Structure formats: C-alpha cells, structure tokens
Length: 366
Image (cartoon, rainbow, N blue to C red; front, side, top):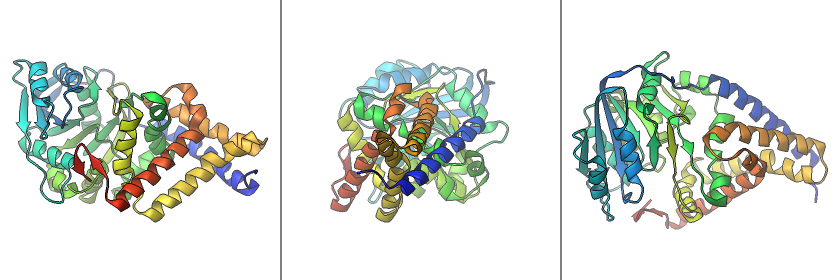
C-alpha cells in the first residue's frame, strides 16, 4: 500500500527544511581552537565511575596527558564499584599527585546515582572550572585547554558541552548512535538557543561537560537535578533558570566516547532514559508520529516510485551524512529510516519499562 501522497509531500518538505537548517547550524557551531592558550586558573577534572574497571584506564591516561593546564587536579569518584575500579585507577595514576580517588556514598532516597556522584565531585573540587568526563571518554592531549578557551573566550558560556565523537559498535549502534548529534543539529537553532535562557531550549551531553563552579553553586548544584535521569539536560536547564548561558561545541577533534560495546548494552542504556526525553507519553507519541511522517514515509514512498518521496529520503540521508563527523560511516546514512524505526522501538520499550517500574541501570532502580 502506498503512503498517502499528501503526508509524503509534507514529510519530504520538512525533511528538506531540517537539512537546510542543519547546514546553517553547522556554520554557526562553536569550534575549539587548534592552538589554545594555556589555562592559568584552577581546573578540576572529574570522573564519576561505577564498575568501570574494564575501560577506565585509557580515560585516566588521557587526563594525565592533558597539556597547557597550569593548575589541574583529577578526582575520580568510586561509586560503590564491585569490580575493583579504584584499584585500576590507582594503577593507571601511579604516583601522580594530581589524582585523588574519592569513595562515594550511596544516593539518598529519591536521588539517582550519577547526579549524586557528580555532586560529591563538585563538593570536593577546588577548580574555578569543573570538567566532567565519563569513564568511557578519551580526550585528546589539549582537549581541556581547547574547551576552556571556548567556555571562557568570546561569547563566554557558563556551561559547555563539546560533543564527542561516538564510537558505534554493531548494527544497532551504527543505526542509533548517530542520531544523538543528528537530532540537535537538525532541530535546535543553536545561536538562538545560546542567546536564550529558556530551559526548553537547553541541550547538553554529560560525557564531556564544563561548568563554571560559581554558576553551578548558584543554580543549586547537582542536587537540583538529583532525581532526573537526563541529569545533563536538567543541569543545563537549572543553569539557564538562574540566568546562565549554555551551549554546544564541536568536540569531535577533542574526545571520543565508546558508550556501549554491544547491542544489548545499548538497548539497556537507551531504555533507562529515553522515556524522559519528550516529557510525557503524549509527547513521545507526537515525536514518534512526526519522525515517522518526516523520515519513514518518504522513504517508503520512494520505493514505490514517488519522486517526492525520493526527494525527502535524499534530504534525510544528506542530513545524516552531515552529522557523520560525530558518529558513523558515510554509507550508514542510507539506512536513516531504519535508524528512526530502531529509535522508536527503543522509545516504546522505555515507556513500557517506566510504566511497569522495571527500569534499572548498573544494579540500581531508575
């Protein structure tokens, strides 16, 4: 059965608009300097870690290798790990005095593990700039200096997320992971969002996040988002709520992140949090409908010979290819409709888990 021509036309038109908007965004996107100036002020590099023994060593090594930081400390919060994470960190750090391991406390009632860990790190840190780095992120040698140059440079921000390049493993990873950067680069008007303090226009990525310590305190710290599963976006909204400015930069030259090694890990990771991305079941349904009309129906129509559908599909593939710097291979963009369908399947599964109360992550209930 052919998709309704009117819906195909609407979807194809919106796909074209989205890709044109993405082109504008990519021209306006903040880019870190290749040769950043030295950072004279104190910087705290903060790593929350729970059962990360199998992959945290390269992260610690990349933090130890940071250049052009006059006054840096590295704090690792061992969040009740059962796999010897702290021992692995000690081995990687050797006798380097910059590294300190903090034994975390259990999150209080109503609080989730990661924001509680980040809050403990913020309390222990002495830096003017706090740099949060996930245990699956590897930084280039001057990544922190370059990111601080963006945060403190012209058009300064109070919270900055340099978006890392994602390493996608397996079919599901190659389908879904590229959608992270594609989504904001296609839908969020970056320059308008930066100038606005509206919480609804916040975008963030906690994999590599810089925040001014004073502004963080003024916003209520991580305690203000202690129960939010999307704590990074919640923190950006909290910063905006007190008049702070937040933004995104191209972090692909600065950092790589290997979030999930298998499709099963990816499914569990998305399932734990995707329900919170669109506010409510009605919001999730609206987004699912829009994604289907804009990115699935035109491709289906193209298969039946629709030129309008082919135009929409081509626009979608072009948009995905434009986001390739952050994840994936150029030819993966050809499967964009299947990426959207995979995401919608994960969204449905996430809501089922939310309603049933079965969502868990690293042994803790969500």
